[in-house]
Image 1 (tube, helix red, strand yellow):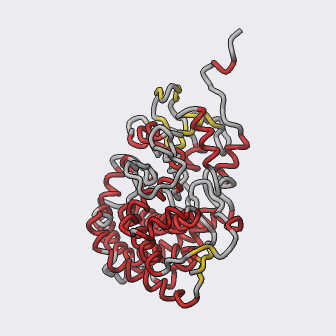
Image 2: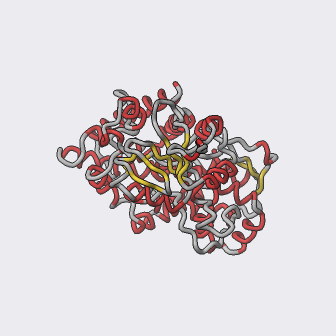
Length: 420
């Protein structure tokens, strides 16, 4: 008698486990779950997290993750390009009439539109230009620590990890200082109220409010252009053939959101990881030239992005021994790939001096994170400045009381109280 598990559809991961992952319940420690997934295979069938008669797969290892993220012939971020039904288009292509947080942005389209859109802003996000911002980022970091230095304690998230990147990207874009706290509130609603399990009312409200804000901000910049990136993009849009109004609004919303959200989580998470590993913290304080290497290792070891935008198979293809069908959804688990035992020596150990660290925390291929050079610069300055000025920094609450933001796609802390 044939074993039923030897048929064309392999055994899937239990619904409860997947639901816990995508709901964010595993945010604090998803790594045992992903270790089990890697044991099952590099490409594992899973129940589609939001229902529907759709085949879904989770990609757990780095070789297959890189292949999918780089192969834009067989995999796409845009379900519209393969004639997906309304359910998928509305969920993943951002087709809502009153929000454009995803629709028409760089993360939701492939070539040739992606190249055109990314090309409009890529000159700003080069390593050379980012390096020119170093002195201003340093000033902001010092100003933030000046405000708390005499208090002997602070919440890293509230006083440092959030305001540093939001101030940097806002200055680049031309976002008024008075609006930044509200942007944080909207971003929080979008992160914790969205994801693969569906959007909550708060998440939808945050997206709508953020979208309305972007529309008003653009209208103000049209009246009074300034020397900032939004004004430059408006000038391009008004030329009429390189950027539509919807693309303009989507791009600005994405730049504001992504320009601070992931880096803020990197700083908060990274600080906690260093405090958790006293030997690595001591090594770093003894030699601050290791900070750039430490940033890469913190991204690999416990990065803020769980998974990027899902990919959709454009045709039938075999991947890691699995038969992928056209229209199948592939979810690339970046934080699992970054702990791949076949790629990294002692992957579950934090090693800030790790030399071979080809992680995928920023993704791969044409959709690799545009802001990676900026994130690296901000991480470098944030950790260096903190450890120079507050070398005795330590948790001021019991470790078990640290709380995590509940999100299926992004990982971060709600607070991180420290004393120094």
